[in-house]
Amino acid sequence: MDSQDEIPFHFVTPLKESSALSKKAGTPVLIKLENIQPMGSFKIRGIGHFCQKLARKGCKKFVCSSGGNAGLAAAYACNKLGMPATIVVPEQTSNKVIQKLADLGAEVVVTGKVWDDADANARHLSETPGSVYISPFDHPLLWEGHSSLVLELKAALGTQKPGALVLSVGGGGFLAGIVEGIAKVGWSDVPIIAMETLGAHCLNASLAAGKSVTLPDITSIAKCLGAKTVCDRALECAKKYKVISVTVDDREAVQALEMFLEDELMLVEAACGAALAAVYSGHIQRLQQEGKLEQLKGPLIMIVCGGSGISLSELQNYKSQFGLL
Image 1: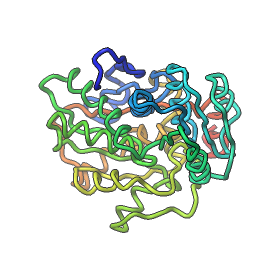
Image 2 (image 1 turned 90 degrees about the vertical axis):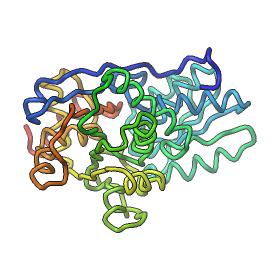
Image 3 (image 1 turned 135 degrees about the vertical axis):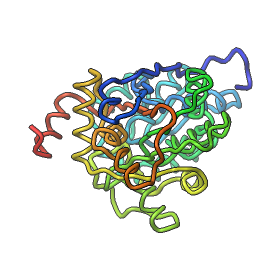
Image 4 (image 1 turned 90 degrees about the horizontal axis):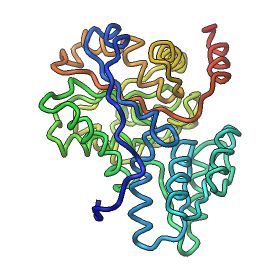
């Protein structure tokens, strides 16, 4: 932070041991509860930081494209700053999220089938003088904001290092921020398990091809992971650091979010279920058996990224869709 008196919009979230996940994984599991951030996700770290910095430089209005969570974080930050915000969302965005955005005072523009379409419109709208475009994931200030999570982990764990970190990947901004954080605290040797749902697996597809790949469409229910192309910085990080890319299907993500609700009494969205499925579907154990992940010397840290795109009725719909009732 440039200014010592500037208070971030995010807050330090709890790091809690999960006995259910520890038992399932066969190793101590600590969950970082980003789902209790303002607006329900980690996004406020990067986007709040971005908005505060740019507001200080004289920006008059923000325009953000979003599948939901980034827009809510931007609307919240602009509301706090007393600045106008335009949030451009795709047609599949729920009425609940659109209402939340409006309640925060944001102008909401609904356009296009997927996030990429909304993003093209947001870039166009931000060409108005005084307006600044906010990417949900592709900007150094976002990554710097997200890196604060690792500084909190370091403060909580003291001299202990994590055995591995588990997180969900959408456009890759969170991954880029976590990598920036682990470089800051000297944890560059800590493996990161990057979880995606099939049908929103732009990082996995790019790593398999050895270059940036654009998915033809987003077919996963985890719409908040729905960028067709991962940001270049995340791909660079995944190649340079110990990043293990894993995909799960939508059914596994839904099962994981239901089991997490049973175990921890917290409801998170399918995009977050992708990360939780690393343990609930046995992927951590499988990676160890295959020799892709060494035995963990410290706790497994699972980042519960949260998300606004879920309700009990939507969970019921998912369960019936995948025969989980």
